[in-house]
Length: 176
Image: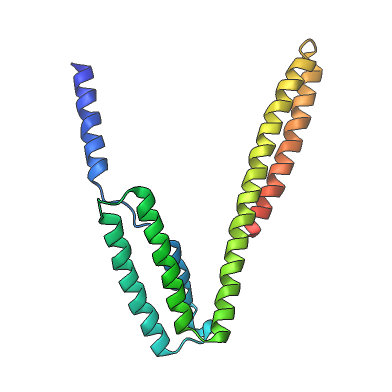
């Protein structure tokens, strides 16, 4: 009886979770244009440019939703269509902006891309550091298997070194 009750509860919770509205995931084009609109003073956007960008953003949002709801397309096809749409959207924004605004927007986009890339590199280094640490601990276990005190000292030294290196990498990541 208890198993049936647990199974029923599990099915109910799973069903409720499946029906719950998903969090709205902002697409990269939306983030960059939102930033463009939010920092309108920095980019010296005119009222007409703002209106054009907002209108195009709304239109592209509806097109993105339509592609997402289209069941005749596979996931890969949806991705390709959305990518094409994002590229055309960026080109439309380029048409709206003047030359100095384009330079500022490109510089900000490049900086954001570089930061993202640098963070990914640091995360990779953190993963490698953890793998190296685990390997070293296993080696210490093997080398000092007969001497508990030396093994403990070596493990503590390696752990301190690992924590120090990890803290440095995390600080670098947080600065980005």
